[in-house]
Length: 322
Image (cartoon, rainbow, N blue to C red; front, side, top):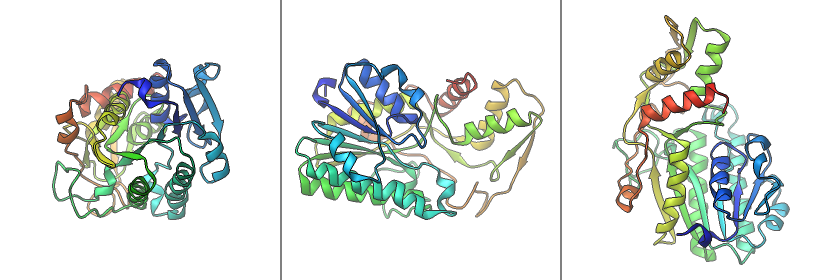
């Protein structure tokens, strides 16, 4: 699909980590873009270069307040729904947050889409955590049963179900991306940010949640945005689901080694917390994750960077304050 075929685009969470990179890509291509963001996690500075652009509009809005969504959606043909609370760790402490900020917000957006006659396609960024502790690795899209072990994963799976049902009932197509761990510039959370912050506070000692053997797939945010835009070309069904990630894994300890090396630190003492439930970093932490990306690869997309390269580049970008 050429960019012009997207029509006017509506991006929830467009000032956030992945959303602002998607905004950049679309604005460069002269697509008309409306970013809808409450700036709770996103930053205006991520998109400030577009604020005066003729093809760009920023709406300070919250998906918990439906009236403003409907008004802002007017004339939009493609919706990218990226707004969410991404902090998996808060699941066990405050599950209501993930229900409100991930499930209820998705419902409110879908209700607005239902009431407009302009939206043709809705794209949703879901997560690998919907699979829970998958017994099949690499894990394909048709793996079952889906048993998320965090409220975050459950909230994303609930959102997927709502989106698919609305697509079937109300005349638009849906594309759902189950993402691996996305890293890169503008990230505000995750293991890399955590390690950099801790080592800046104390360059001699690093606390590592869990036992350090957690092993997962990492994808650079630029590869992620490319995949999101690529998959829109292949919506054959009312709702398509694509895994998006890299084809290898790195451990948490290996990430610590990379961060220390990039920061020029030697002989850092690693202090492993031991974690919970067999060395996980926290309750609900999926210890081993690798997605099968064969479905989207067969269509012609593959990541430019593997997990290690993505982590190395992300560390460099975060250290430079990008």
